[in-house]
Length: 444
Image 1 (cartoon, helix red, strand yellow):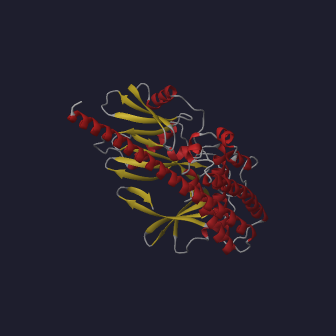
Image 2 (cartoon, rainbow, N blue to C red):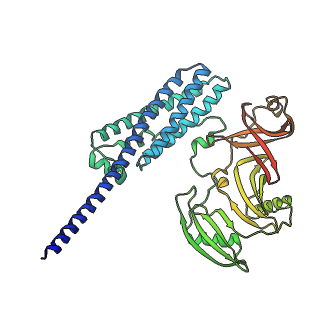
Image 3 (cartoon, rainbow, N blue to C red):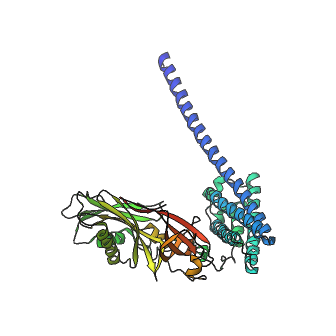
């Protein structure tokens, strides 16, 4: 071998070795970063669950509404943080799903009782009984997580094991039943059942309006064709399944006869519901009024099986109006059950539909009983508010729960407001400012 060839070969070997080592270094560094992330999240999870247990213990014995409200608010916050950290860790097991459900219920119940205290109401014997039940299960969860912490710290198990092994294989390999312990902790725990506006959501963590059996892509394609109208179709092409979003769905692109523009439509995998429609047709002229367009939108929804939908707010952009429609039952507007339509102002065609809110929230609600009268609710309002109209509504709260309210539209010094008074407790739940502009009616 010539000297130059030897030098070249040597350099090539060193280069390959160097690249291989660098790749190994990057992989190890990535693994270390991931491990550190898991370690941090798990450590914070253990701290949060310990805090939840401590706060529940304090709430069990507190008789002061002020101190109890403070303690329960802290319980609510720590339980929510625990859920965040739980979801950052590579657990994949029925027991951990039950743990997250339990923490959700702790969060919701603590929030509900804190609101009760803030309104200067004392907790009942039933409330304290429920707190004791939550505390008992929280102690079990805390002990299980502390046991798992010891196993991780002593290198008996690793995050790789947790990511790649099922709980059964994992238990057989390491003679540990941490995951089955979590599951057994909640075998007889079915969730709290208590009176209150949030009870439906306490016991159900599902897409309430997403009913029906799962369908395959071919069935979804048929539903998309029927929804658009088979007589209008030139062809329909599948874009595959959408995963990782709020609702799993099949996506299709539709070519309509005598038109250049295409229509995109998404059909939910569960139940075959219309999730979203997008039509990019250019609308050049305005030939119908906003009022007529809103009515056409309501008629369109009724023709597609969405009955009793009431328009709420809208915004206009050039020659297209986007309208929010909410489900209405017995004169009660269900604001969470929302469908948005984009309507062309040249002929009233529906250019867009988005039903995520409706599919997430639509259900039969069992908490729609008034405890206070509308006169009592009205007495809670600021006397300077000139009342323009009154109604009833279910509104979502910041914690993604719902509450049944009297809805008052009023005016103060030329500015319009919506004020929501809880129909069961008389508490002021929400105040919105109504903005009427050239572009539409909005609330903030």
